[in-house]
Amino acid sequence: MKRICLVCMGNICRSPMAEIVLRRTLEERGLDVLVDSAGTGGWHAGEPMDERALATLAEHGYDGEAHRARQFDRAWFAERDLVLVMDAENLRAVRRIAPPGADVRLFRSFDPAAPEGAEVPDPYYGGQEGFTDVLVMVEAASEGLAKYLEDH
Image (cartoon, rainbow, N blue to C red; front, side, top):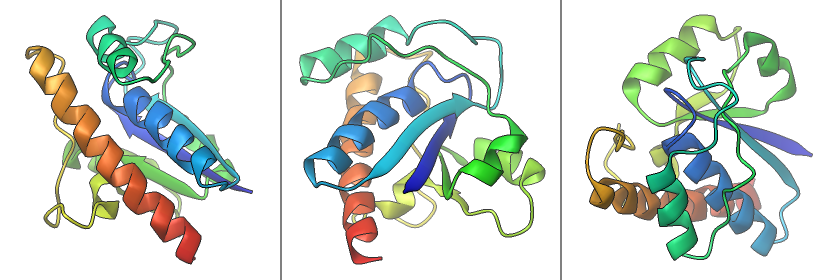
């Protein structure tokens, strides 16, 4: 069974939204993949998802109530086939601690319509529309990743 971890800064907005969306996308396609998420920083560890992220997910039929933030641990590389990060800053942070051969990529690299190097921007300091934009991006990347996994 494949295992994927989605990573952002604090694990309360982007990566948990992506985790919830990707998990459902893969389940709907019958793909047996374990999906989780974490942040590069631990200051939100144990906290629920940002209320705006939760509301955006709920408006679109997703349930993120059970999520609790946690910090990525370098030991997890041994247990993950793929680590997908939301932006270049977190990509650099994760790659700094990654062992040789670890598969670490930008999540949006799986969205065929996204330009090379496309990021999922952090909506935390903006308005509600930023969370809606993030949802659209993670849905597209999730569909692309599901197709990639089906083909590989």
